[in-house]
Image 1 (cartoon, helix red, strand yellow):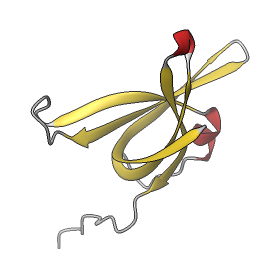
Image 2: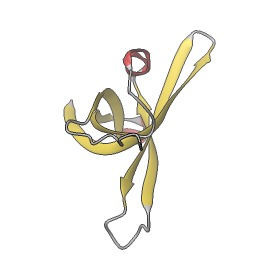
Image 3: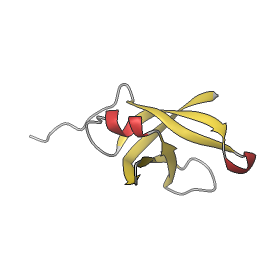
Image 4: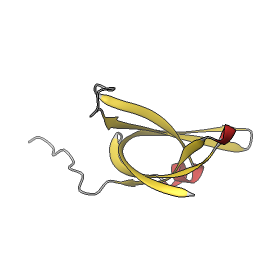
Length: 98
């Protein structure tokens, strides 16, 4: 399996349970930067339930390094799955106004 690290803003992580199976998605956004998007490009990526359980971000949305595993999915297509989320280093947090 091939792993990649994405730099994006995490807007939320959602988990649902169907019978005894847990399913998760991470909602991320990146700045446009190309001619196909104005504003923020939003997407969701399937996520390992262990990521949801261990996630402890200071706030949402929050800039993060997102580790994704590239694997073969249905119909022999390549798909991605989030296997780790860590807060980005050197994030400037807004100071309280005095």
